[in-house]
Structures are given as structure tokens and as C-alpha cells.
Image 1: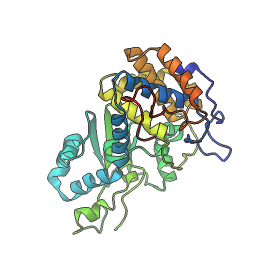
Image 2: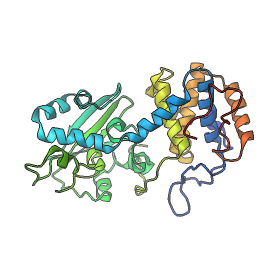
Image 3: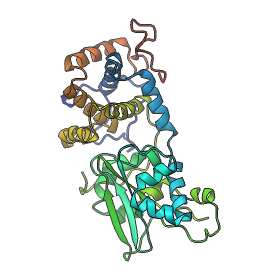
Image 4: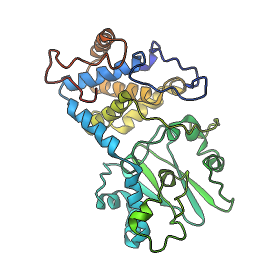
Length: 219
Length: 115
């Protein structure tokens, strides 16, 4: 079992945090670690055996780098201006996103709508499942033990740490993502945005508002 | 994990290192090619136990899970992996130095353009 090896030489302590309390980050000029060697070996073996090509790996990284929360923001803005699209999005978020040209892959995507009474929050308690096709790679905090453990235990306290102090009358629904079921929050359209263009509305939609740890910007 | 008590959430954000992006790409490409499912990866991650979640970084766990699934599928053997990892260790002291040289004996299969 690869994880039985303990000869990787990361300097991190038991919490994986540096003395300043920040996660260590791997870099290209640090001493080669056990797990980096494994990555190189796996990649080379897969390429040499004809299972993958180096170009595929490069192209996949480019695709990943090109994804951003702007994709999700475009979907949200469309739902704000087009009631029929909103209905389709809430019915099948994957199909509605594909309508706009976004590749969602085979996974099920579910849009959950914030209203005056309900606020939705997304987490993946086991790992880091995230609507990456619409939002890009998850932010570091989404993957932390702290967020994953506490989002389902004390979501109101977690939201307060993100600067979102919701009244007790607001119902908070926490959605735990699974391997093949991802969620995206459809935030409520901010007041004072009547007559704004779809593009201007999309600029108000933040990444965190689509995870549930924030709200859209005010115009 | 979910439901346990834990400390304040660290809001720091950093770019991903190249090797981390490659792990991510391997995950997407190998599952897309049918070598494993995301369920298979999660099973491997869960089997690691709590210790791994406290001592390994995120992408360290992912490459371990990917490797375990690929070995189980028969994409390559543990012996091949171990031998290759030893070779890689001999190439150089850093991640960049340990990449396969572009002019080695397998001109068709080397030279990741992101090196």
C-alpha cells in the first residue's frame, strides 16, 4: 500500500501546518518528495504503456486552468433574467448548463435556489467534490478539514466566519456532495438590479455566492 | 470528518503546483479512460483512514488513491512502479530535475510540455 510508506520528507508537523499556521505548499524547487516521485512514475508508466499521451495531460491542465467561476456566473445571470431557463436549471442543472455550451461531463449537477427563507451551503465532507466544470478548481478552504467537518455541524458559525450573519429565521440547508452528484447554489438576485444586462448581472455573481459562503455583490 | 469539531477555516489561497495539477489531470484522464470510477477513488481515500487525512496533503492522498486503483486494474504492476520511482529518485534532487529528459530512448512518449 503506497500510503504505508513514511519516507516522504515533507517538513510538515502533525497538522500539516507551518509554524505560522499555514498549509505547506509543494513547489518545483523543494526537495523531491515521495508522492511527487509517484506522480512522475504513474504518469510515465501510463504514457509508455499507451494508456495516455503527454499531450492529453497538457491539454487537460490547460482546460482546467481555463475554467473559472465566470462560467457559473453566466449560468446564474441567465437564470435571473430568463424564468424559463431558471425552471430548466432547477429541473436539471447539467442539461441547462450544456444549453449554454458548458461541458458538465457525466456527473449530475443540481442547482439549489436561495430564497428569502432558505440559504443553501455546499460542502463535500469526504473530499472535495465541487462543481468544477462551472466554477474551476475548488478554493483551498473548501478542501480543508475545518470546513468539511464544521459545515455540517455548525453551518451558521461557519457562515459567520465568511462574513455572512444570517438571521435565525433563515433556514440553512447544507448539501453534501457525492462522487457523482454536485451542487451549485443559485443565489437570490440582489435588489436594485432591475434593468441590468445579463453580462452586468454576471459580474455581481461571486464564486462564494455559488458555494453558499457568500452573497452576490450589490450593484 | 464531516460533523467533527475543528478549528477556524484557513482562508488562504495558493496556486496549485505543477505536480498537483498533473495529479488532477491524471485523475480526470484515467477515470475518463475507464481505469477507475470516482467511487473507486473515494473508496481508496476512505480506506486510508484518519491518519492519512492528518498527515498527507490533499494531492498526496489523490495520487496514492489513483495509484492504488491503477495497480488494482492492472494498468501496471507495483514492481514497475517501485522500479520507476527508484529511477526517478536517481535523476535529480527536485521535481523539475527528476523529469524524464526529452532526448531519452523513448522519443514518442516523453517530454511533457508543461515541464
